Image (cartoon, rainbow, N blue to C red; front, side):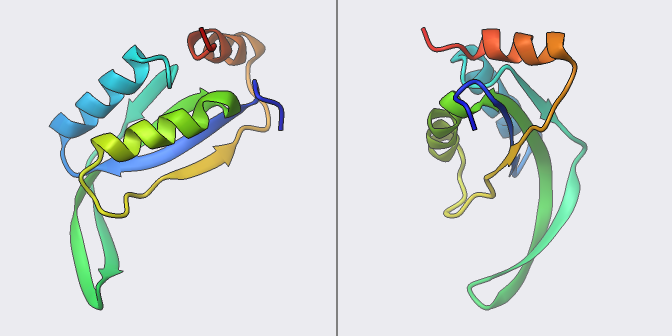
Length: 109
């Protein structure tokens, strides 16, 4: 992958207020061009040998490979979970003007 290739970063937040704060910080700092907040949903998982569950707000962040490590680091600072869900997925293509916009918004200064 080239440094200006797009990636999606998938995560979540435990509530809407924190989801909005995370989105605001990542976009304002130029680490993500856009962060989509989804509708709250129930997440079920095993943690420390127990079945856990809770409502979460899904987050989808658009950035470039060049910025993904900074974005992940900042997201870890903002996220309250000991092991937050953070997945990085490659983008195989897209509308050229949108791809260019993401690159412009996340360009290193």
